[in-house]
Figure 1 (cartoon, rainbow, N blue to C red):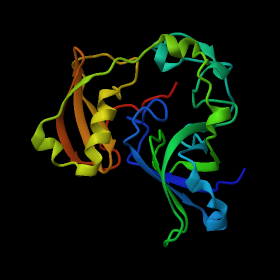
Figure 2 (cartoon, helix red, strand yellow):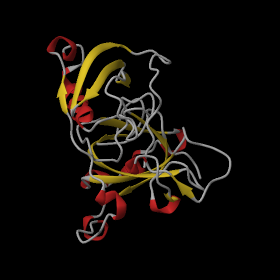
Figure 3 (cartoon, rainbow, N blue to C red):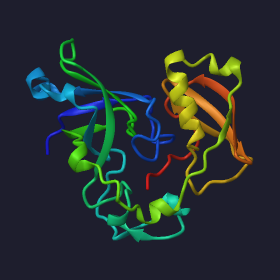
Figure 4 (cartoon, rainbow, N blue to C red):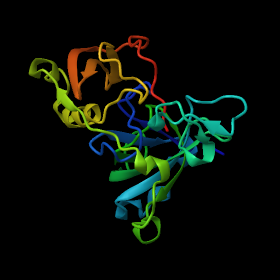
Length: 236
């Protein structure tokens, strides 16, 4: 398996990354190819598709061995499910799959072809193994059922973001950040209303609390690695 590209997003750490792709479509990302694959011919015709599949590496979840069951955060982290019934990063092979919107294909430039995508659920710098077009007539299954993931619905939060703090965020990033916060970026097993969280996003550290269904932002400061003490979110 060769790494063909890396994606660049506003998430320097796992904390705050959407639980699945497409949940926050306003989030921007750029797929930049590695040297041998930096060839415009390899992307010929891709501009005709609205969405693409990214096949990628759980690069921040690499470990020796594997276990047959995991604890999905969607179930509170207290119930075990078979690893193949979840999207946990802790798998026999650390491979992820995401469907993202293809906003544009930039064929020429100093970095060669660059794919501009929306709705990615990947950490900045995640290695990409492959890219495939999303084909509606075969990939879309309206009759599909979602197992335990369908039974557990995430509740949206009301977001209180003081205007003087929101103004620190670049205007083109504000919509994505607000939608992300409304999705509740906390790990599903944490519900302490007194806990303060720090979420790195696009060069900023967003401090917030959550109580009674309301997320309140109290701090926006420049982000530096190691600046947030909140443990990273797990996918499930």
